[in-house]
Image (tube, rainbow, N blue to C red; front, top):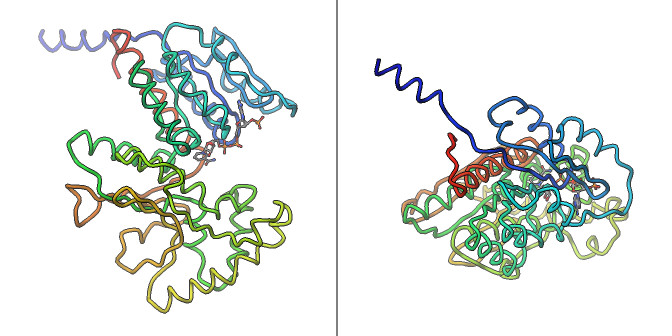
Length: 377
Ligand SMILES: NC(=O)c1ccc[n+]([C@@H]2O[C@H](COP(=O)([O-])OP(=O)(O)OC[C@H]3O[C@@H](n4cnc5c(N)ncnc54)[C@H](OP(=O)(O)O)[C@@H]3O)[C@@H](O)[C@H]2O)c1
């Protein structure tokens, strides 16, 4: 009798109304988000979300009754190229002014990123894969924190560093438990991890860069990866989450791109990648003479951050991992001599989309609890 009463109660799990979701960006990551949403159709996860808006820089689709993710992926990917930019007002009209509302940012657009504080202030939750909001100007990061504190909206950033590896989560949870973060060091770029995992001097570094580009591991212009700017944004995001609100300019970045290569157009640069080879080969020779290995590393210690190529000794905690794996070590009050090490696939559309949708589900739960609606997570 008692067991039956419990079973009847657990069968009764009233759910709040679904969140209205807007997706910005239908490139590699955005299409993977649509794919995952379409796989969720008819499941309890799918029932929590109603995709009402999807856009890229050319076209937007809106349906308050709900877009079919599979159909809108096809429609958006076939949209002709033109100069149209999505005005934020489009998104606001689609989301309306009540209910749980969530914007997914799968763009690399600074204007979209700069608009996040306004969305959060309007009570709209944001889940982003784009590093331009939290990994650039400190003022923008502070605006985002303040907007979240004022309105209770959630800013989901787990896809920005390590493509959803539990890095930001671990930093925040350690601090919530009273721990203080002392230092962070990591291999945080999938493309640079792959390049230095492979580079043994048997082929010129430039040949490996061309192969990485052909495999889609680098940006179309590989100098964007080799400059270290992407890693600068990642260590800034981690540093700020670890309690060190530092300015972008406080990160010392040692670019791998020689001046002569940096001055060329993207097309010219691809023809002259051999300019990379002499200094990097010299660094490999130096590493070998010391019995070490080369890795492109970001470090934060005592509020100072730097990014660049390092020679790691055989027992360094950043050694290990393969392919495009990220590997990050965290030192804190409780992890003083032996760091906490987190390693795994830190790039790729599928894991990034999964991380974005983790944040969307968290935002749905936050929205439901703010509205006092009962829900089972
Ligand atoms: N790819 C990965 O593995 C990965 C991993 C982690 C994080 N990320 C981050 O995720 C973001 C997306 O990466 P991606 O590889 O998917 O880039 P992508 O393939 O270049 O796609 C970017 C998308 O954003 C759209 N877009 C640009 N401006 C827009 C605007 N104002 N409004 C709406 N849409 C706009 C583009 O439209 P068009 O289609 O019209 O050009 C395109 O669909 C980036 O910030 C990236 O750094 C990517």
